[in-house]
Image (cartoon, rainbow, N blue to C red; front, side, top):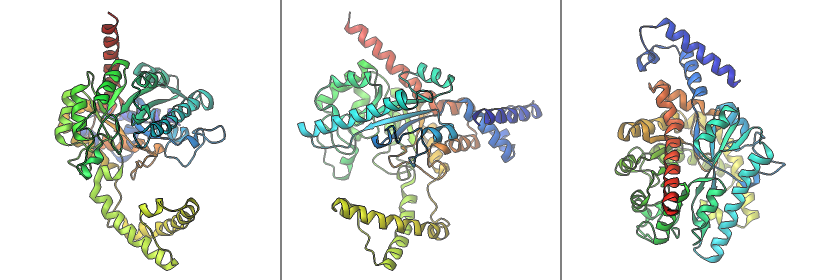
Length: 444
């Protein structure tokens, strides 16, 4: 199938160029293509560029001999979905929610992190070594893709599991981690979180003294500093402290959606100055918050109407989480049945007046950031299986639609290649080169 799409796209592009030999394939010529020609042209580009998504969450329950990503699970990312959608590189995430800054909290977090590292390695080394391989560098990425396999890479979302042992930075690097954030939703021992914006209560006033030492270690071992979840002040500190470019693994432009997880124009420009890259994220509220809120309000009205007809009382998320496990399971079973009944009503009543966030809305963020900070500093992420997914790119099988939308807007193949993977891999190369230099200096 993949080879068929590639040949189809190349033939369409060749036919177009032969028929228009005096005019190169530019935004104007793309605009003149028929829909069939444009899709075929975009398919050719999609097959030739390396498509890379920097943020895909995982659940260790999906990494067992009986149930794993070789199967077409309900998760947004699986090998069959990557293969059908032409997603070449998935960064699987060692995510740990923020817990107590105690010995017990650190121990539980450490176990969670190691379980996820182990799960990713099992996928690549035991379950599907003939279909996917772990990459540790940009050279690995290109070699693995040339061999016909998909690529796994590892990012660490929240350094909290390290406790106060900064030697674990090297350990995480040895396990394959190539980026790490110092905080998630909640202040860690290393840095303040973006969540502090809600109440203006912060723990460190940016990056802590321990966090500064971690950044030095990350620079030394070649792990990219991820600024997607920390507070604005912490991000500014990281940009100043890091000796190598940083990344925002899954953040968009705050000017287009006012969310604390998105970056202001000021921070975007500082990332450009730093030489880093911002990976626009396909998560509804980060893409178009107002659109999501308007749609959710109407869907809530429908759910409440159906629940009332059933004599069922809907609860707030906080109330649900406080329920006993058995009661919560029973509640969720009924709630899911209401959601199923609501689907055709939503399609008929809500979609026409409050449509979902879609790929066009997402690429608006790419457009905005490219215009503000330049084509060399923008990338792509989904946050699949962690809240991400929009109409048109709701799982890895729909990855082509992002390329198609960029082609519609006149991006060249070279530009699309940079946005999909070139910029991120360039930063990884620079981070790893800096690590070699630092290690050489320290051994002199």
